[in-house]
Length: 313
Image (cartoon, rainbow, N blue to C red):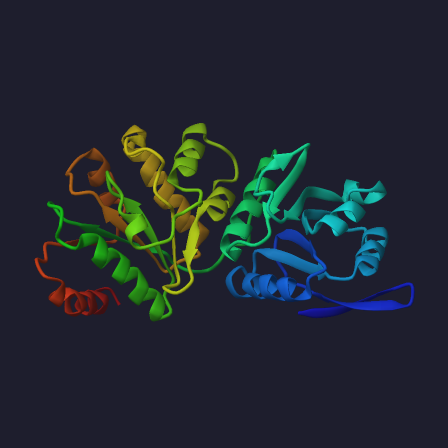
């Protein structure tokens, strides 16, 4: 939805998305803003109320005239100076500066995000910084999808189980059924299929579950990564190979439940470890569909995948 806002004889276009988190982007680079806004509208529609500005004067007038609070303000250095001065700062819950070459960190109390990086990483870091500023539950808009869970298990390694799990996610997404890939292996091979460099991952999720923090759904949103070519969302592996062993079966089942509760996906595909332990037994118990995978040759992969999709349709 578009609106034309006017102040002091000037007008500017504002694109609005009806959602829960009020996000304002203030950046002079029109091409950059256009690409970021297009990404948000394509991949995060329903999550944000979005307004954006490329003209400093129009942005300054908006801050002076608007009575609405701002949950997240993402601004270039010049716009940041405007927003951090005077009465405007009282309207902003989370103020973040887009930096060039400074990285994504906090310096002298200023929260920053590296400007030139993947759009999904910008969104993840933005939500993570917003989450740190919250002392109460933030309820994101609910979707209406009925999420089902598929467990892919093999009693031995080297059978192509992970290839099947990732391929299943890709095929489901290609058919218009969004899928989340959840790797629960002892030693994870997620990096062989997805870009995990620099991404937050399961370590953050595991810590959050242990601490029983608020806003777990928002934490999941901030940590998950997206493969835009395959249209699959996933978590990067934990930092240590023993971290998953420190999680109780109930905690891992709770993670699955929380992802299902968000109702963003038609399917969660769980890539199981080859062990048959209490963790796997518990995870199998929360899955509507289970497949034991013992194929010796990748030649049968697509045939088996298509037969499986027909069985769960």
